[in-house]
Every structure is written in structure tokens, then in C-alpha cells.
Length: 110
Image (spheres, rainbow, N blue to C red):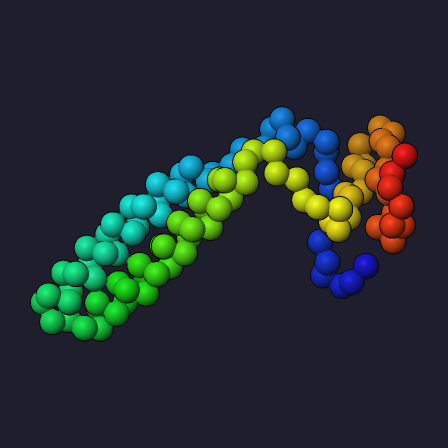
């Protein structure tokens, strides 16, 4: 293990308890896009080029976030990582759990 590396433990209840803030992020991105566009137009018309550039950068960031959120929402709720992602280690709760396959072992699990 590398120094400073964080190990994420999985409890096994993630699909049942996970909640995604994507819908909230979508609405916040839309809200930010509206205000950044409004600021860009308003500052450009009043001759404040510096503020207009700042609003243009903010507009680009909100549009980028909007694209990322849309992409992730289209993946769906049942998106799972591919086989190249190693399995999580079992929790330390004392209960026995079936361990995943060794990441170095390229054979299919039983």
C-alpha cells in the first residue's frame, strides 16, 4: 500500500442506500447557466469587458457541468464499473463475506 493511499471499504448495501445528487446538480447548473448568460450579456452591453469575460468563463464551466450531469444521468441508476475495476475488500464487521477475485488473477470468478 502506498503512503497516503485511502482504502474504501464496501458494506454491501450501497445499491439500496445510495442517493445521487445529480438531479439537484442539473437544476443548479441550469440556474448558473441562466445567470452567467444574463451577466455576460448585461456586462457586454454596458461595456465592462472584464466582467463579461468572467461571466463567459463561468458560463463555460456551467455548460461543462451540465454536460457531465446529463451524461451520468443517461448512464442510469444501474451503472456498474467494468471488470478492470478491482473488487472492494470486505468490511471489518466480523461477519464472514465472500471475497472478490484477486485483481491479478484474470480468470472469471466461480
